[in-house]
Length: 356
Image 1 (cartoon, rainbow, N blue to C red):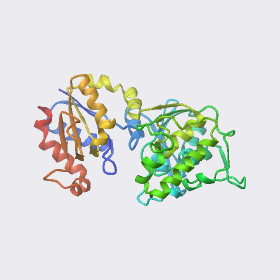
Image 2: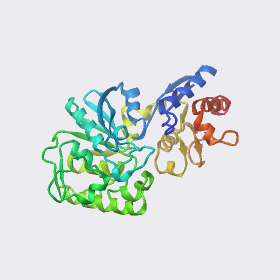
Image 3: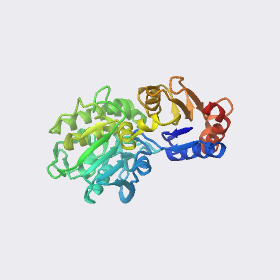
Image 4: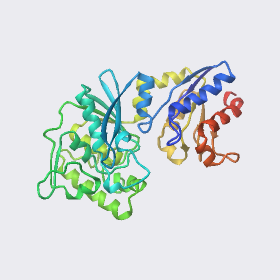
């Protein structure tokens, strides 16, 4: 029997690789089946790691600035002529949420680092950010100049600076970057379905700040040569997607679809008897196109058995079998605190059910 394990990460608890390796270890210890571990991502946490596993990408390290403008260690993944960059590496959400002080500058630094090292093709994973600066910081790191009311240059724009922008020049930005945006949302740049109203509250913004940020995104868009207000996905990563897209263009695609194409996922599913996937929390949002749901759809297409193993499961509409880590016997705190041990135990106890 061929078993394919293709999970997302259990966000903040286990990486996709840790999940896949743990499940594989239990199954191979208890059976003689052929098991393939394929850690996956839809563009957020673990996106670069997936390319490392699938394409043999190498990790290059550099210094950059974090979401609050402090120097930190960053990295990119490279293979062939392509660099894979996770926005969350530099501009990721932190425990202390100060969205008005946040910037995407570090993400721009990582793109510039890739460019300076000869990589012109960039795949940008847009998940897990803590900023809402519309990509202003990233653009400045890539050579753009943003001016305030005194025509002074804003050296590292923050989300709170958007409403004080009085000029923008992108003349000094590189002209030959080809960016593919790995995006799992279709939210627009601003408006009720935009970056500020939909995502900023999760990043710590109150109602007043949400309205201020939305106005700032509208203002920034007015300075772009290319209006991106109606571009689907432009609001991803606090508008990083839209800001970069306005200057560099490129292609906005599902992170899942990008990885699926690189690893020939559909063919692997066709050749498997059982597919195991999962994530930290499987709920109503999963049905909107998150990784386990997309894998389940491919399984249904090819009449394959799909097993979902997630930290918590709140819907019965994903997978043929659903196995949660947190249940009547295991509390959420236990599942989070001892995730790897709990995962191994749940798989071992459910093995007959999984392989049925």
